Length: 207
Image (cartoon, rainbow, N blue to C red; front, side):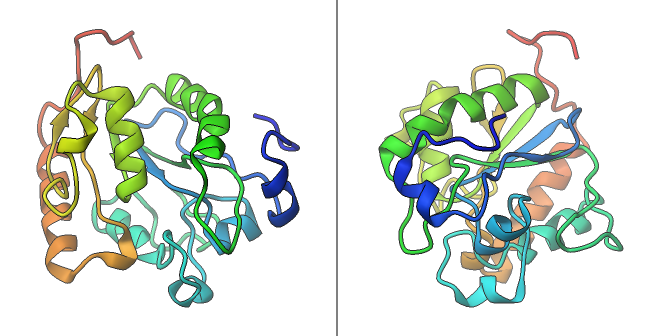
């Protein structure tokens, strides 16, 4: 993982640092957002929260909502620091590694970062991928399911399980955009999945 990546010259000028994935490298559950939030760009950990996230207009803002979800599922230690959450069985990453505060990533920038995401997925070898938000759902669905990405969209895809090629997908509406009912629905759905025999067998290598 290149800490000085310069594949996207425009982002090199706006980022604070390259933000690669973070969490349990033996995780069954891998969350994929769109881009680093303002807090993630600052501390170098994807999908972390800060007080400013809720008002900066970021598509990944209010990431503390995701943390609260993980805490409810006993996947994050509630006593761990906000900028260095202690995760169990969870790995967090994004489609892109660098942040422009004024705009979402371009298709070219997502393509440039795809080798990093692919390397993380191969390294972690998760059982379940959780695309967070529309952009992540479109990219992950295209790569890892046989269902046309155009048939998968929010809010219908939220809190559902989609069987993919070697992975199950459980899409999530971005934390800042979720209603209380959507949050509860996703937590209940994911808790039921965790209690089930969710591990895939076809096309999987041994863990």
